[in-house]
Amino acid sequence: MNTLMLGDCLERMKEIPDGSVDLTVTSPPYDNLRTYNNSLDWGEHVWKPVLQELFRVTKKGGVVVWVVGDATIEGSETGTSFRQALYAMDCGFNLHDTMIWEKQTFTATGALKTRYAQVFEYMFVFSKGKLNIFNPIKDRPNKGIMKKHGTIRQRDGTTRKQSSIGKVYIEKESQRFNVWRINTEVSNANRFHPAQYPEKLAHDHIISWSNEGDTVLDCFMGSGTTGVAAKNLNRNFIGIEKDADYFEIAKARIDMAIRQLAIDL
Image (cartoon, rainbow, N blue to C red; front, side, top):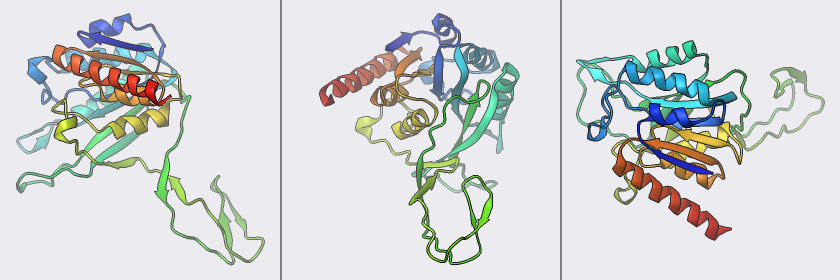
């Protein structure tokens, strides 16, 4: 299934049935910093109803990944992202995890006189009740470990005495931490949107919080990066975008991903 909707997300989300979405991966505008073509006046009157609608359409045990940052005004951050997270909890979501996207290739322009350069965004992971799915990514290299005596810490956190002398072998890679260092660089040929996040960001969240055949939503679809990742991972996708130009770009990109999958099969 692939459903793309052109229009205001608050209006079009009303067409999505209650409890039908397994996972939302989206990045809303930031304190009116992302008003592309003046297409969205962003404030509490928008993001509060959006979070309410996301709670309605999310399945029990489903997840919303809300990638967001704050504007810095006269040297101070607005804190809007935290207000959004707290309001999501008021709507009924659990704040399952506060993750960080560290932008590996971000370069600060000029020296900041009163603060350090901000090189990250928040990735709030909200769950509707107890989580249904978690497929942890294991790509953190383990250092070689060898013990010849003493105790061994087991996976459940308990310890036991080592029964024999010799090497203790562990997996080559461990579960990733919740700070994700992902390259922000998108080549000009592949950049379709002023705030386009890397496909790997969407890809890794989709792997982590959903299974094949599940339904993924992006209510601020932009140029369709979440949709491309969802189709490449054999998920159903629902995308909503208000700007007609970006909608057509997203549609073309997602259609191309679907065609490529058909060729590969």
